[in-house]
Image 1 (tube, rainbow, N blue to C red):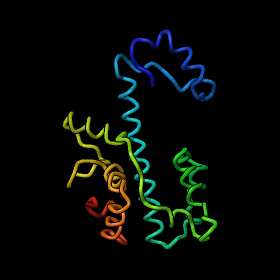
Image 2: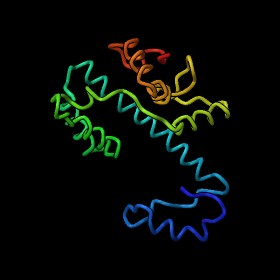
Image 3: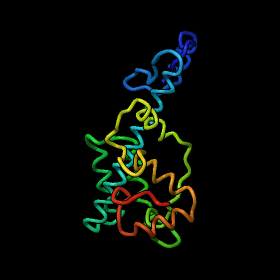
Image 4: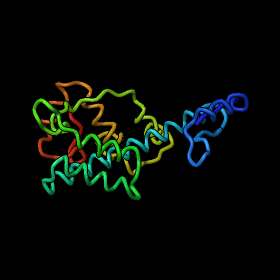
Length: 180
């Protein structure tokens, strides 16, 4: 997603190393200045919304039906063979299918709910706020950042993540306020 004024000279190199679909490079000039960076920022926001949807789907299936992580992994594998085929669905199925050897429990049930972030997910929403727009993926209250960004922010420290988990025990993140 390059932009700027150097694409004419760098384009052939970038296109030669880019991923290809049906022989066509997944690389094209997107505009002057920081246009490439802006397109990547929007891509990141869409990806965060996709990840939130995947997480909520997993939670809904698990909470509503009591289906195991391994069984949900198979559901995601089936979905990945159809219209929902994507890298995120594929890796979700893979992760949900993992069992930790020592305790013998599904990895997703024992992994620490803590993640670092660089702020990439917040960029599109900051831009939307500047443009006085609202995104369906954003929450209206208490902070206009989307759930995946807000909760990832909340999980940056172990103590904060643990307090948040205790506060919303048994509820999905989308039904509660951000952990404090």
